[in-house]
Image (cartoon, rainbow over all chains, first blue to last red; front, top):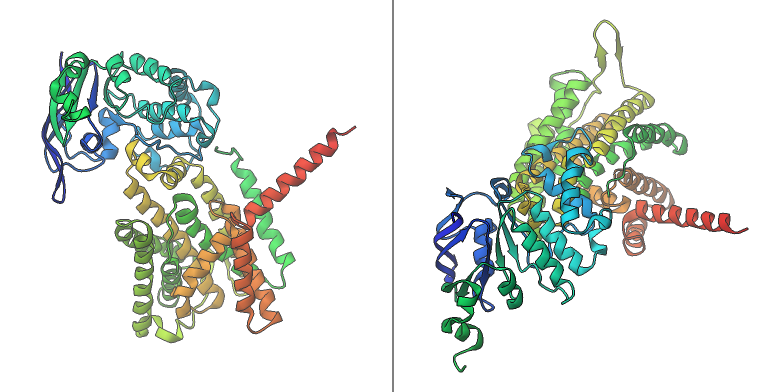
Length: 249
Length: 325
């Protein structure tokens, strides 16, 4: 299997604090790759480096072999890399449709600077939006304001917005965070469905979800990789058990 | 939700505003002032109401517009259209310069930077006395004429003709701005206001968009400043001072954020109230202050929002009555 996303000796420092140390990660095409670890392990920092939200201190990020380490965040969706947020981060006073439409519009470079005609809401734009609405089962909420959606629906839309750019690599930051137990199966179905067309890197706390959907798992602790493998291998790794449950066990 | 009011409806509305305003007011001068400050408020609203950028330095663009247009009319005598277009371009340029630096910081620091740039402009205007007239302001400004070669030449010497000019410009800018806020650019600005991080993450270069909106704001505000100088036939130093900045900001919040109609309403309410209070009492600023406090406390969303709510209530009540047998 070929590697689509790779980091080489990725390090991120905030002043004296080292959040990520020499992380090497290889994500195989067409897989769901989980990144797990206890609180403060540096997962979100690592993720922000992958997405370009924060600059890396040293090391490299390669997307399909292309070095994107210093590529601006706003250029990454067009390069094929898209992210979602752990804390729902949507345009909450806009409709579901408008949230998705904005993400679609962002893909045509320069389009957003057009001020002499009204924004397109039909044709290919509407088609692209409707496709994502259908996949995320939000078709009935097309014109609902995001602030009026349930939390579960917002989490799904969070993924939907990231999907609009037809990413080849999708970075999902705790897609089920704050979701009720009843909503999680919907997310699992969505992720398994998405796997057919893109590679997913997933930060997740929900171990059940990780074992169910992930093909490979990387465990971080203290900003370093301490274990890697299939969910089964990782869950039997002594180091991982210690990291999660403490020395005494 | 994007509302889909056709552009010609906005055109008709702007036309109606410009036509009716002088009938309701004691003078053409006050009507002129309302429309031109309406433009300045639209410029402020692009930043604050649509993009979420609170600029405390709008007087820099307004005052610069006054000076540029005044100086051009004195030294170059280009005619009204080139004068105003060049003023707008220069206004955009200054705004880009301010924008490039100010947007590097967010929140309170951003606000302070816009204020600092405006104060810088004020002192430059104050010190450059040979050019700007310093404390006395720039005197002897003539209103340039509109000459269409071989056809006609329009002078704007009377209050009425100058009002007609301002009204025509107002209608054009009003319609263009209605178009802008519903355009792809306008939707991106709204996205930035609501969630900057996400706007960047889905692929928008947020910084560049902020600079672009500064350019629009600067050019519209400079246009307003130019018209004001031509109205007064004089560009006072106060056009570029802190009070003018805060006045534009007050009008913007008074009228309602994120509404082009609200912008005109804010300008109208502010200026009519000032005019009215000034006749009542020499210390009229106190009354104006009380009015502003009242609006802030009891009309969140500004006058335009309160009017909308009122109309919604009335029409709801009508529907109810209609349903009863």
